[in-house]
Image (cartoon, rainbow, N blue to C red; front, side):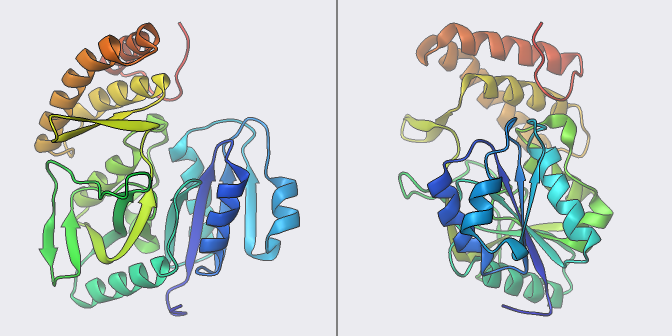
Length: 298
């Protein structure tokens, strides 16, 4: 590990599978100087597990005792890392499988890109679907290759993304008002607003799962099947971000098309149909009226 660039990992959990979580903790804890685990579960489930199974002196566990959303949970860990003067903060989900070379490869990427005079906000691995082993291939935002090993991107998903701490101080924290969906994308777009750049490293790959399952439409478009309540955040947050001037027009067009497709497919073909329809409708209404934060009944 490059000792000149100290890295703190921030892993967010919500009622995790303990065996999977244990494996992922052991995969990352030896690669970083510190691991902050933020438990977003309403009932803390990790204290005994961490005390018995892991190097507690290297792990800081924070229980929020409520689900504050991915943005707020990440911010808890990011704040700790910044206050303790870490150079980089790597974000992880409970179900992401960090490879052994994840941190070294991303730190090497940051140092190389900085050496080229590039103002870098974050860098992430190549992400593949850990169920199908297929790479996630966006229809747009394929990126611009730089020096063979790096691809400049518009956005990166949160898991596996290494934030440069000094950039965070300029760009700001994650947007907690979005609660969950598109929090990672919004931060990348805001970074670009401040003149920073976002990169993907081809030197490292990481398995991740987006949604509960997915289906392929016309062999081109992968439709992710989330839990019904996620429709609320996807539709609401898309509408909220349509109104922000730093969000790229090409994403707004793509998201508008995707939401239109989903508005037709989910309520008609994916059970529970009525429940999905209700969440979609409420998400649209709340997005129009700028209602932010956690979903509220009524």
